Length: 103
Image (cartoon, rainbow, N blue to C red; front, side, top):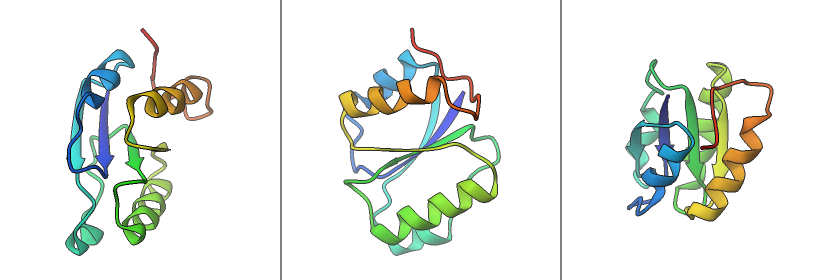
């Protein structure tokens, strides 16, 4: 499973948390620069994770809209492993059926 991570200058232990949920590959956008508003979500992405405490507000809305248009699940989390785990646990039983699993 591949995710697009938006927000957060540094990811710290987040890749380890993602791997424990079956997300082995990811693309990371810091979400701090205006030019990122024009970027498109890559086709091979299975889900989008937005770290809302480390991102420009307008990019949050743009990414949310683009994910919805492409029918890609979008998770909003603080940039903390504990909050990300909580949000991904909520995803396990969601309607998107995006292959998230807790190990």
